[in-house]
Image 1 (tube, rainbow, N blue to C red):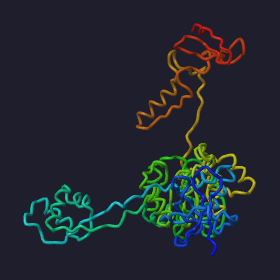
Image 2 (image 1 turned 120 degrees about the horizontal axis):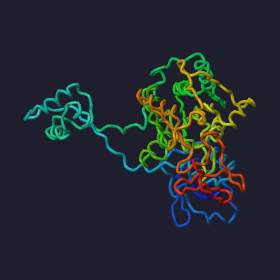
Image 3 (image 1 turned 180 degrees about the vertical axis):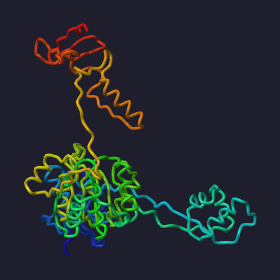
Image 4 (image 1 turned 90 degrees about the vertical axis):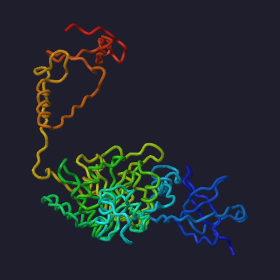
Length: 470
């Protein structure tokens, strides 16, 4: 009987898989995560191809797969995505696979316990113990910390009642990575344009298939509420959603906003997760126990069990471009993954990127415009101050009118933010009276004021001169 040969792709900087013998007792299939010998060490790998032909005489030189690991198998759409990204970015296929296998270390499960009333009252009934019995009289399970908090006592009082048999300890199941969001928890009041856009996105989710929608709305127009409706529809269909965010550490503000709409926070995926939380989240996503994932660009490579929608928030942000390891743009690769998985994707931005605008104008993307701010709010006024007429006094650099507006904002309890282009030196020197710019007499470049050196310096040719008298 011919020995079955499989190809295993390992997460190293190589563009090809290695062939191994597949022991029949392991019952291996394409996508299974396995342990294989790689040189002098054991390596993690994924079965990438089955029944691989091998030249005669090489069978005895192949090594056996050592073990099939207890992880969910990588689905076909994720394997195709790894192949596509590697080919498009000219990166080793193993390095792309590494991004899909960042599952962390699970380790032993931490035991969770609760207490409840189970036995007779204690022989010595103190006021603290009486408060505990009153708090637990409903018979519900509570953790020791919750029981102590409800009764206003320390956990030592709870432990004492457990030792006397008054309270029983009950093992609890592990805490879920993220609880089930409720799509009807708090439905928002949408404006007319918001409702039209939300209906289109909900229809795309219901119909299924690959579509790209550009949600183009001014700041404050309610884009988030609109794509939340698409996520709600995906939850109703019992499928998973991915929201890509540009920040590595996701903002608490957005997570709270999600909880206000759906009742619970979503699962998170970013580099600041602990190894244990990363492992639990990876497995929960692969098992389909998580409905919504909010994450940085690496969340694009998670092994979703049934991905039904991708949302790229602030799609114009340069943070989506990874410039170390595998070079890729998460926004573009998100479109590719949606195409491979055959699901809709939403690109949301107040200032869409040039590439996205061009694709929308050419009809490749559908553009949904929200031109007005929610609730009739107006955009802040922008006004330029002519420093030749309203310049600051000598030794100051803020115009008096600007200083007055900032003072008024602070008196109202508001905030003011000032942006400075540089610090430490003036990038050019202007006359306060007429606005004349001092240039280098040799090359006509700007003269930079190095105030502590009391010199005007040309950074192009090196010319220096003392500053003119006031």
